[in-house]
Length: 379
Image (cartoon, rainbow, N blue to C red):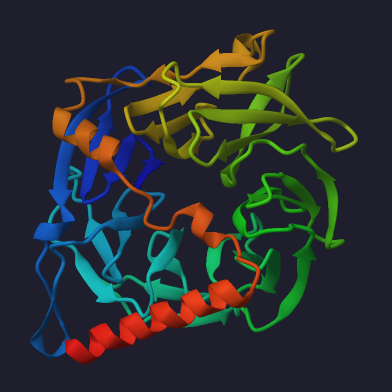
């Protein structure tokens, strides 16, 4: 699976086993290659001189600090890698720590604090001190896999979304104080994002975008069903209607070649405005990131890096607008394009749907468990 990060004039593309850095050129939409590193070549020595095998490692999630000094990466071998980007923004040997479970999301709270959620349902905090990482401190836990989290714009709350159809709001940093829950989704909640201190959007396995009132713990409105697949990610971007700037909601369906744009009217009802599509119907968009200052959305797919600027100027009457390929000087090399094309989702969204319990799948579960125990005995 590939991911995209943006900060200042730096663009980061993580594709399977490689991290690729690009720098913005004179043109706002033109980038040049800076450096790259293969995470399987990183030598990892844990406590007691225990070596960690990384030759089959894959990147699960990543995050770039606001000042572009640090890049954090979570891997399938349960490692948190922190790269200190020097003045030339070159990738070098990272410092690292071992995680208890595979990470699902990484986010910088500030330039020296990293938050990491995992498949066990926990949210951890790590501090960066002079090329070292502190022991992780557990902030909170769910009884279900954590799929997303975010801090409120005012910094007072942390919201966490899980596989059990719910969103939880906890006081921050006193995360042991649970303020409440948001119920309404009929399947897992994959992505959440704040519009402002009082409003939150969410999307997931039921393919519907929910708009929540943070203080009243209730759903204000919902979208129609946006696709036949789950919603992979939701976000917020500025749009302009009749010379008035307002928030727009963007949505990435799973296994899709398009990103959908919705507007909110004065009654807080959602209406679909546009669909930004790749010309190739077989394209698969993995991730997107919003550049707030430039009112631009960048996204990474199997066949390249794209962008669009959702202003009323480019909103077509047909409701369809083509995504534009981002320019690189020199052009993207074939090895990166090949790796993007071969990228696989390490946590397929289809696997998050719950299967109703019956006699057959209970028997299948017992057989799989017996096979795993047999492999352990033989090893």
